[in-house]
Image 1 (cartoon, helix red, strand yellow):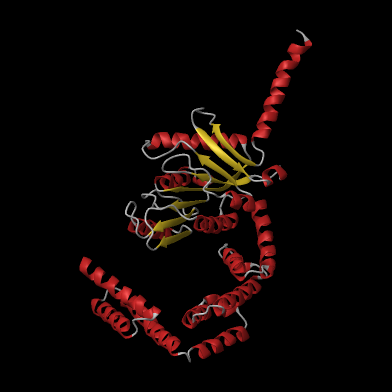
Image 2 (spheres, one colour):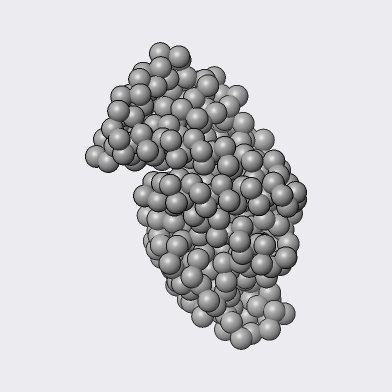
Length: 405
């Protein structure tokens, strides 16, 4: 055999390895064939860190869509910031049977596992409408390797997930295609089973996809939560994240913009066991001061009062030095000299008592009737206050509940 013929297989193999390595340079790679069925395709967005950290296994967000070809849900910037792979499942869509959809999903998962350095369990999924249904099935069927689902305008139609899976709902209250009642029922079901769960119900919105900032907010929450809480996390991952959290707590106060600072603090406070961090009280103090700063710049005195009053009532404020809380108490007293604010304050106190009375009533019809009458009276006396408007809504709610019975 000639030397050329001997070298040819080696050269071809070397070219194939080189091509495979080039396929996953940072950026978007689209219409990649699946290993099990070349007609099925997937897209991947690779963050820059993938090329820089050759030993790291990367978290992933699986993208699904009711109509197929979901793209990356405009999450590329978020993926760069958090060092996450985005993988779109192009072929699953409404109208296909679930056996076929599951085969497509499994082929994308198996192919990407063979070709990319995927984290063993920090895997998330999202989709819209029927795509959300697809997304929760990934968690249902691959739960040991999955961490969370963001369902956009869908309830999941009763698909269950183990309680370590984070579930987030983003829904429109005016959605007539997949009603908010179904979403709320699903939310309450996951909550009762012990899943970490959140819901965003947007007033007036119909069957419309989540806005980018809403999707990012939910992903931030579950990503940071699961980096600490997932039961299948490698021990070295858990230790590294705890160190990172400690560093982030120390640096929170250096964030110049108050809104961004507060968002970073709230993200940290949503992480399990953050209360045990050595600098947790420092984090709480930064949260308190930032919240006060944002409240006090509001031009409307009633809004300022409401925010500061809520701040003092937050259980976290018990960890704040008394001098800080006393200063806010003095600001509240000064604000109440304004007649409009005083009316808000009076209405709020009555409303708080009524809410407690309703909760204590349980199923006692007489006590519930008294609470409903109290709501109506409050709404009539203080119609232009926040508490008065909330009381009117509660009176309507209790009236509708009575009719159904």
